[in-house]
Image (tube, rainbow, N blue to C red; front, side, top):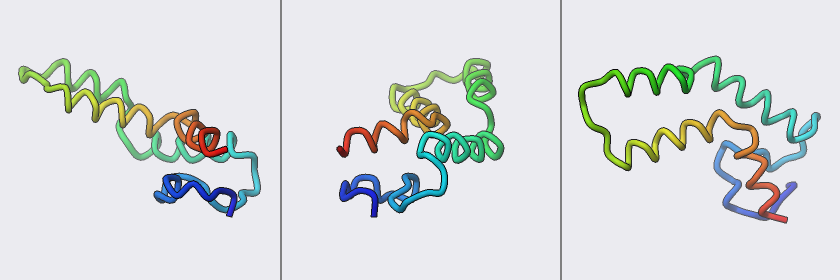
Length: 82
């Protein structure tokens, strides 16, 4: 194991050694999400073109989507566990 921070044991963080540096690993990991999910810009466009009002919890979910597509958000967890 590369960490004992059990908050990283979530199926989204690498807790075993990787063959590439973590920054490159997460860059590739996020590109997989970008290839399978709608782009963040498409999601925003759909939301703001909708006639419905959105709650603060909806905005939190948007932030979570943005973080899911950002390699820096994954690396942050590793840096905080040191």
